[in-house]
Amino acid sequence: MPVSLSPAEARKLVLNAQRILQVNKKGRAIDATMDACCHLGYIQIDTISVVARAHHHTLWTRNPRYRTTHLDQLLADRKIFEYWSHAAAYLPMDDYRFALPRMQLERQGKGHWHKKNASLMNQVLKRITEEGPLSARDFEDPGGGKRAVWEWKPAKYALEQLFMEGVIMTSSRQGFQKVYDLAERVLPAEVDKSVPSVNDYARHVIKRYLRANGLGKVVEFSHLRKGFKADIATAAAEMLESGELCEIQSCGEQWLAMDNALDHLNQPLSRARVRIISPFDNFIILRKRIRSLFQFNYQIECYLPAEKRLFGYFSLPIIWQGNLVARLDAKAHRKDGILEVKHLAIEGSLKKSAEFLTALAPELWRFAHFNECDDITVDRVSVSQGHDKAIRQLFKENIKKSVPANVCR
Image (tube, rainbow, N blue to C red; front, side, top):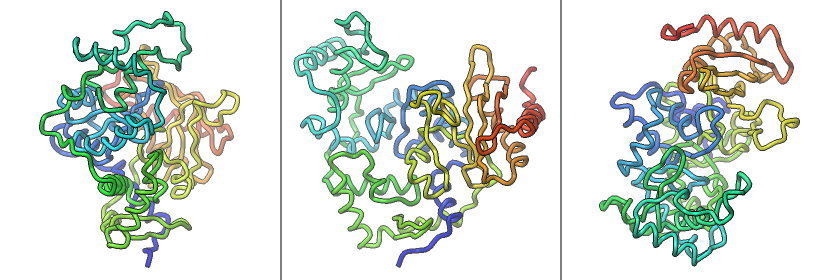
């Protein structure tokens, strides 16, 4: 029989599994970063930089001592590697073999990547083999660089196809530019390179998802895993039959969880803690799931025309009291050292706006420092999309009261 959980219990299970509200881990800061990478299974990479990029933001949320140099160091130490999860991501090197099935599909032309240009791929591969690590900028652009911002030059398409096939890997990054090298020159000798069986791969996907998310559905396990959805569904059914998985009923829906998932309910949840979440955080990335569990209808609006945006270009969900209660559209003006709060939108369901603003202010300062800013400005605050001058004034006063001692003003 399914275990019945209240919505609050289901949310607690998910938040504890995600480790969003955990306290500082002891030991070296970079080890805490590596632990977060391993626990989550992947860290999505994104290019948008109005505030800290998603891969940095996601790790900072779980490791207050996170530094943006950590990922470069872990990549250089070959403890993580870049590949595709549901999107471009950093993954633990220990999980390398579970990227191989996707690489095989790409080599067979069954992936969703670009049309192959075999001749150009051979030329690119020959240069890397002979010259060593190269980036896209090391290859000429026959178009003279006159392309739309979303278009790549032909060599970049060839590099990415070779990357998706696992022939080459990201050796390092120069700024945000990938530097590619042959996979055999990047992979540590001790890494397991054996291709898992279909069933082993499917079980790995399910276990990794549930370890990081607490509970889920087959459609979530197989999200954007073209070619593997049926196998993942079969493995989930087998694991449920064997008792490795259990069924949970909550929020009017059926979920699956590992047999020990309910242990998360015995762990404390810091409801007083506020967390500002990246739109590409593992926790928030499946929007339908978040609507079901948290009654929070979230859409990132940077892909919408400006006139259709309700909350802002890059609004960040905010957690407080174990719920998603607001969105923050912010921009880091790093040269000027100012974090601009373009719009703080508070959910109409939140009954304790004043208490929330008091809790948010010190976390916003922490976020400002993470974004290399030592001042905060506030443009707009709204409650359920209606402008509220009194709340805005209260928020600004709380920010002033919470100025860290090390900030010169």
